[in-house]
Image (cartoon, rainbow, N blue to C red; front, side):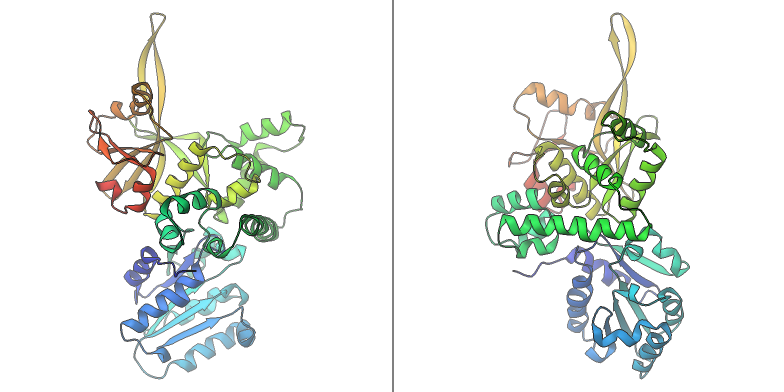
Length: 417
């Protein structure tokens, strides 16, 4: 397997180098956090002249470091490695093996010539509350599964074949090492059952029942569709699953979000400049996991493409909402308010992009349908329609950029073309 370049995250670590904070590398399990730190970033430090003796690498899932599970032993071990006043770099992997690691790391962070990087793989470390343990001294680098451009750079085959694989099996790095469909399916299904769901059950002291799995299945079936806990509870009721309240469903969805398995996207009223609290959309952090959960049955290309675009926007560092545009229509002589949707409203600093995911635009009628919400937004920010067809990008008469999905994903400057 070719080495996967993850320059986006490498650059984030470089930007945070020696910033007096504990760099906390988070993300869903098996997305490549450890490899980023212990291989890619390690080799970068060597390339700029940092001596190996100044990089303290501790892989706590290795039996040779078992004595360091005691936090006092860990602190002593690291301090003894510091021989002078020059900068030292500490890499700690699977740090959750150390009981009370937060306290020892807060203490080590007071040493002026120590630059600390940590990652971990259990549910506590994956959860979003870990940064609070570092009392404002934690600096998070969120790592996502491979984007399509990262996946394609390591895929041995054509871009078209890479897209088919990515579309089906997603971007968890080890997928690239699996030889056939059976191995890939088994890998994803095993991860879902034996790692992700097991972690959530363990972390939150849940009884092993069918509710969590039923919620996962329902979210996977309706990816990119508007829903809320009340709607899910009603669906449960109609399917004979009794006694599951919307409060319980909301709690379980939060558990899935804390483990970075799914993301919730709120609706934003573009003209009214306000958030609409419910319903929301949910997307999976890796489309392969979503597909595997449904045994690769529901392969609706439009929803899968939408999920992939959403994940790409997050990886590029954008804040993403679902847009709502209200306008007046005349129905039977009466004026009525109608809501149109913009798939993604993306903000990054003073930039904003409106993006519509359209599976295909075979005729003018479909084009009018897809651009209907965009042309009603009267500001000057970029408006983009992404289509499945591998077309050359062009602008329609309304100034809207139309671009093929592969070009959009492979060109990291596609938002600003």
